[in-house]
Length: 246
Ligand code: FPP
Image (cartoon, rainbow, N blue to C red):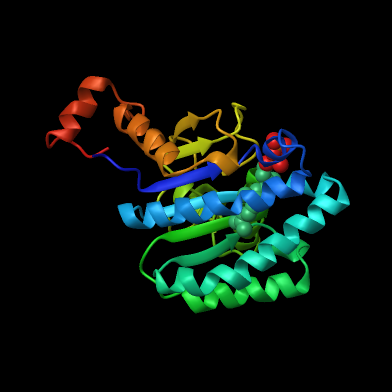
C-alpha cells in the first residue's frame, strides 16, 4: 500500500460537534483530544514519518476570550499528561507557530517536551499553535533577507531550497496528504508553501468523530490518486517502473 510520508490535518468541527449535543463549544475541543491520540497512535503503527496537526491558527486569537483560554489550558493539560507516553512511543514532538504569543508557562512546557523527545526516531509530530501559512513564509523571508542584507547571500541565489530551510517544517518532507475534517473545503492558511503538491482530502466527519476507520478511508483514497508532479501520466508510470524519479 502506498502510504503518505507526511500527513497534515486541519481538525475542524469541534464546535459544531458540541453544539449538536447542546454542550458548550469547549466540550468539543476537549472531545477532540481523543482523535488526536488515536491518529498519532495509528500513524506510529503504520510507520508514517511525519504528522502535522493544526491546533490553533493565527486567526483563532479572534475567538471569544473564554474559548481561547480553554484551548490554551487544554494544550497545557495535554502536554503535561501525554508527553511521557509520546516519549515512550518514540514520538518526536515539535510545536510550530509564533510561540512568542503564548503564555510563558506554556512556552516552557513546550520547550521541555521538545527537549525530552528531540532524539526520538519514531513519528515526527508537529503541533501548529498560533500558526499561519503566510506568517511562516514572512518569517522565512525575513530570515533570508537578513542574510542578503549582511552580504552572506546574493538575492539571485535565493532558491526554493533556501526558503524551505527557513520555514517551520524545515528538514521534513512536504506533506503528501492534506486532510480537513468538518465539511469545509478550505486550506485556511495552513502550510501554504509546503502543500504545493499535496493530495487534498476533505471529510464531512466532525473532528471528535474522526477515528482509525476514518483515517483508513483517507489513506485508501490517497492510494488511488495518481501523483504527477507536473508530468504526464505516462511519464509517471515510467518513473514507477524505473524511469526518472518523481
Ligand atoms: C476547529 O474546530 C478546532 C480548533 C480550533 C481546535 C483544535 C484543538 C483540538 C482538537 C484540541 C486538542 C489538540 C491538541 C494538539 C492538544 P472549530 O472550533 O472551528 O469547529 P467548528 O467549525 O465546528 O466551529
